[in-house]
Image 1 (cartoon, helix red, strand yellow):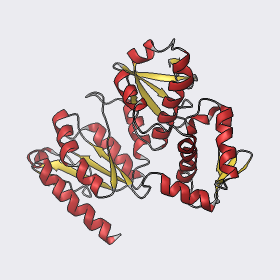
Image 2 (cartoon, rainbow, N blue to C red):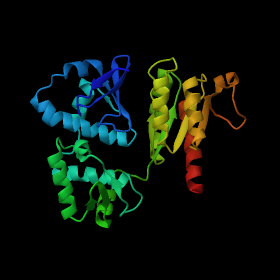
Image 3 (cartoon, rainbow, N blue to C red):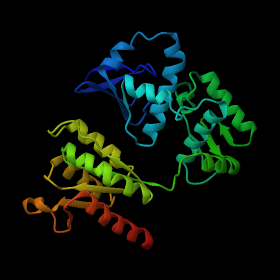
Image 4 (cartoon, rainbow, N blue to C red):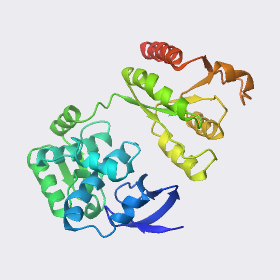
Length: 305
């Protein structure tokens, strides 16, 4: 397997190639996941200057870390990097960076006072978007003095005050992740993005449309789909065309007891070869109709919860 140096954390890790992208897995930027980067951006920045290495790359490392911790896709190119660095998603002040550490601890626990282990601080400072360990330790000490956290060696915990601060400043943690599995059909994908994603979002879910890079089953893609699905609370799988990747990923979700809603376009339903009598797809003619049906189903489920 080919190894390359991550531009942002400088760790050598195994990579895979997918068209014009490189996929870096399990580096310090994405310790339990991966991120994608355009080959041309990687090549052009291997000999980056001082500003990039000391200012911009640590910010990108923090961004990748934060998004991968939330099981979100990260794809980097000249265009996306410029948008990221100019967006409000990058913390600027010390307070904003300190909040990133509070949010991380909050995401790893169910209650204040629960210890979280952060081993090897020397490679974990991207949790706060800082470029080095010294500044990371400074934030830790500031939060301790403010009564937000307690630390014993590698063990960190949120105090009651820190828990409340993280809950109020972080994302809406009440939202559930919903993964959408579609066949290789760009028109279908665009229609779902336009008509279904907004409806699912309004119902309290964070919808993610799992990308497929090509029309052939790819073991690497299937592995990525599995790791992505594991953090979901709901999967919606469309059987139109009966794509093997969709069946594989949705079957895995069922196996780990994640609810799956099956759908299929009405004019393709007769072609289905369904592997189980328990799979009863929701029929639809167009995406606005499907959006209405899903809204009714999910709203009803929420009212029973």
